[in-house]
Image (cartoon, rainbow, N blue to C red; front, side, top):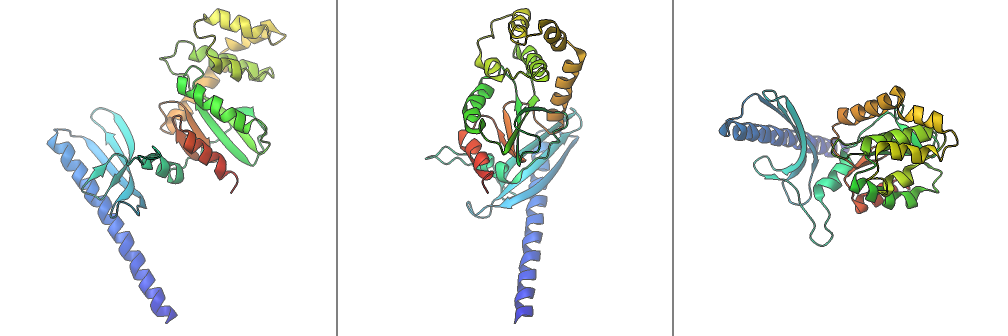
Amino acid sequence: MKKYLSLILLIMFISAVSFASSIEDTLKENLMKNFAKRGLSGIEVSVKIIKQLDNPKGFYFVKVNINDKMRNRQVSQFLISDGEILIPDIINISTGTSLIKEMSFMYDTVDIPTKDLTLMQGSKNAKHVIIKISDFQCPFCRKAYNYLEPKIKDRKDIALYMLNFPLPIHKNAMIYSQVFEAGMIMGHNFADELYSGKFDSKSADEIIKYFAQKTGDEKRFEELVKSKEIKDRIERQKKIAERYGFRATPVLIFDGKKVEGFDKALIDKGLKSFKN
């Protein structure tokens, strides 16, 4: 009887895998047809099923990778599909939660080495790691910082790492990152003030002078802020973010689970996952 049940389960497993593979092939074929109808050539598509959904029935959470060789662009996107129909997202009206974001958080994890990142808070030997991909002048990064910081400031089990990603659209973002890095080298964490927004109308020289006076060694601080060492460090961090497909801020990564954008519910979910 046990052998019979095992055989049935094996057949069901093989059937499920085969069906999932069929969905992948169908979706890929339909996407290629769609591109062809729009006159787009030189495009490669790969489809990976991440999870079968309970609702809506017959649909899957899928990752689609598109390589546009003619225009030298690559795009990865999560979608909901049954192979024939694409659903960009499903929003719960009562809670406002996004199914795509929820599923991405659970199943699309990322492992970023912390060697070239900046330990902002806690010990490198802490049980849990939060990586923050952030721009000090980004409005939503500021909201994320103000929301997260009070929740973790006394947590000894969390190491918080900064991955600087100053966006060119923000005038002072780069100098803020340089000031932050110089401060950390000298034992000063200026994050609170850098995220505050009160220096956004100031010049780079005014910003440097203000923070230099707080260090006790103005000359060394100013040299560090303007140093190739710090500029190169920030550029390395930006390249790490880009290598993992990140193009915008903020991103918070809780032991590999990503929260892209400022999303209170998912931030809370990330912190809650540390208790398990």
